Length: 508
Ligand SMILES: NC(=O)c1ccc[n+]([C@@H]2O[C@H](COP(=O)([O-])OP(=O)(O)OC[C@H]3O[C@@H](n4cnc5c(N)ncnc54)[C@H](O)[C@@H]3O)[C@@H](O)[C@H]2O)c1
Image 1 (cartoon, rainbow, N blue to C red):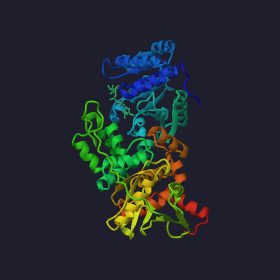
Image 2: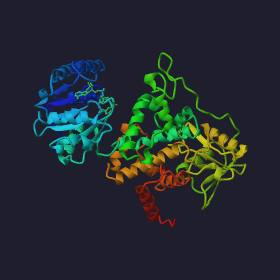
Image 3: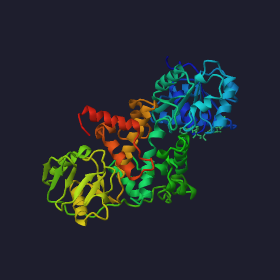
């Protein structure tokens, strides 16, 4: 099954933000494109807006004048749905309402040919439910573009329960022929990206709700330690708190209120108060000045502390092993000792530094936890967490140690799993769970999370780096401390961890 022939007309119905972007993509790829919108004059306005964008591409030397002129000739606003009769593909990008979309496709089915492919760009409705309105739902699929469609390469090609394989394959190949990177996925709530990305927001909000740290500190740790392009608070301010919350709410409801997807009360209050983010001038941050720049609180950054004279490394630090080389490079002597029971750094005070593992500092006599970094060498900030039982001297030595490695240090509350570690563990878990439930392949999930939400690594790449057991062990510990079910590791992650234990000959 191949992509649609470039001579075949493509229709886009609903010419708002997404419809215009999708139409531009199909047009630049070479198709004749028809635009239809229910609001009078809007299809023509969309054609004008697309024309203006093509002009800008010409000005930037990304399109020739001749190609722009040819594209403009291929773009036609339609007066009525009947004008779409000869189209080989219709992509719908209308209002996000099931009844509106079903009604539209019912009408379209009476207009287009039997072999016309029908697609919806819905982000949160069930593709199966929309297609359920059709006499022939086999020709119906989801084609989920990301905003702005001309710039973002990812397209989730969603097969509904009744979609034919040939329809999904044709949609997939067509998206690829348009220069996009398609990934195939089943019709489950949030598809790939909006499902697996939920903990990125949820865990940041949970740390905030637990008074573990303020938004500026959590964002700085996610960026400068976790390697994410933006923190969860600034990103949701950009997306719109109402939009982000409604996606979370819809995924949670669609999973029959699965506790793993529970929305955040703090975000609810923010939305209720009208602080929707950049678009309303205020969200988690204030954008009151004229340029719209965030009035930022500074992240918590510890005062300069004395570096420790030496450290003892006990056991294998796992994902944080790189630290030993960094500490030596900073001129601090490290003595390594084999240790069966723990993996930690012992400071001169006798206190210990351990990688965040889902336990709380209060459970141990004198411990400071440090957060997971994407790359300890390149991280510019590290979060530390201590409890009221941690001695001030141990905390000062821990701060001094990371400062000696050139890092800013943020001290947060005694939050088990800290910030980056619990976020990454939950993303890894949801990714394993999604593969086990047939949502998508590991490769497609990694591609989707890198391209759809800009993660520095796909969940499976991350999982391989961290070691097979790491995410499971952390979530198991967190689940013990918060038995709501929110952190319960999936059976898929358990299998993954257990299989590795057997393979590696462990007796645990
Ligand atoms: N905005 C995003 O970031 C984004 C990303 C991915 C998917 N989506 C999905 O794309 C779809 C469109 O979103 P948008 O942000 O472009 O919305 P939008 O409000 O910008 O545009 C919707 C357009 O559809 C038109 N319309 C409404 N009902 C119609 C009907 N029955 N027939 C024809 N036209 C009709 C409206 O007049 C409007 O021009 C939604 O399903 C949304 O969930 C949005």
